Amino acid sequence: MNDKPEILSLSKLQIHLPQDVHNQLETQYAILNDTSSCNHIDKILKSMKTSPAVTCCRVNLLTSSVDEVIEELKVHLSTIEEGDFNVHRHETISDLVIIRANNKLSADTDDSDIESLYNCSVPPNKECINIFPNWSKRNELGWPMSHRSIVVDRYCGEAVLRGSNIFVKGILAADSGIAEQEEVAIYAHLSSKSIPRGLVLEKYSGKCVFLGLGISNCKRYEYFSQSSGIGVIVTKIAGSSQPSLNSILTTKMMMQNLPSVCVAHALDPQPGDVILDMCAAPGGKTTHLASLMGNEGLIIACDKSKKKMLATRDFFQSHGASCIVPLALDSTKALLELPEGQCWMSPKDIIETASTSGLLEVGFYANSFDKILLDPPCSALGLRPKLHVELSSKELSKMADYQKRFVNNAVHLLKPGGTMTYSTCTINVCENEDMVKYILETFPCMKLVPIQSEIPGLNGLSNRGLSEEECQLVRRFDPSDSDGDTMGFFLAKFIKSS
Ligand code: SAH
Image (cartoon, rainbow, N blue to C red; front, side, top):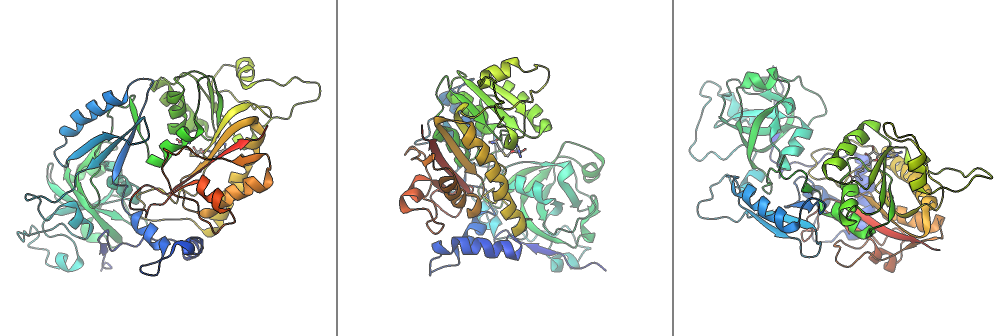
């Protein structure tokens, strides 16, 4: 006999964090707790269950224009039956196009509108349809009686909430008898205990959450007999509607989260600059720099992973970003010592004299770059949507130690007078405000400077040793801030004194 499955609505789901991580974050954010409601970290975790309400498309100015992208997006979005979307230019960020779903309730909106799906663990069933007359216990177990259902893995579930369709590889369990074109209910498997792919739903006994509805693209057996392809086209999700933009305008724009788009703008690249991007793959921010510079200048893009960098190189090419030189390089080791008697060489000379076969493996001398974009690996506790977190507090503190190694190299590689941005996609203060404090204390040559006023964001937290003024200079993006409604992110800008 199976254990009973635990079937939740997204509203009932509490994102699982290891207790020590929860405690650590709770202490960091205690300063923002208000007496009227739950503590701040729980507010953040609640917003992390869904995607930000708007989709952001950053225009590649090397191949297109904002007007052209808006026009083409409008045409594409008008072909999407489910959902009504509004497309407009961002108020202050010049190369950013925003897509917002019009989720207003109207006379013809039925119960299955997104607001109610968020609160449901089964699809609304006004007509009391029962397609399982011979499975009387199904209702008791909590599965829908009106729909056959599928259970997908967690990562696939997170992608569904971002507007993605479901690839067969992500499907773990499904009801018998699902036909092509049949509407199915979609659940995400949450327990860490893995389940074998191909399980029939009757045998499923884990913990899962209802995510929405979709139309099966094939018969049930094909989910598990095919190695690739789309298994279910998602039609309604339990969160704000997200347009599916896969394979749309791929070289003319890129979908990026709003705070990520702020980074290249904060660095403010100018034609002719020599820039180092220390952690570049998959290349979103690097191509943004190239776009803003009109390809005039030199961007050295490093990533430790050769595999990622080879894919990123193709991405640079498809975006027409010809001023970028991709390197498979551990940038915590990017700083070369200048041997006695040897002449200092510029990044351009180093690149030109190095071997040209494959990806170059080189390093650079101190004081080489006009600008450095440092977007190091981080705990990623700001990514949305998130259905589960597997990260110990030990791993969290290790992250900050690793980031310091990038910072130490960056400070030396930057020219006097040069600019550096530091960014993370996490809400963990140890990697954010604390890192700013570390940089200011360890490197008196580094000065925290204002980020342009058109770049949105909140002040830094003031309980970590930064002064009021310093808190105002950084940008903190808080997922629970309903005005911003972004991912969790942090951005600071420094100038190295001459
Ligand atoms: N800036 C990127 C995202 C960077 S994510 C963008 O906007 O698209 C962090 C990246 O750092 C990962 O791709 C990871 O492979 C890379 N990385 C990890 N350790 C590194 C190291 N020591 N040197 C260079 N890159 C590293």
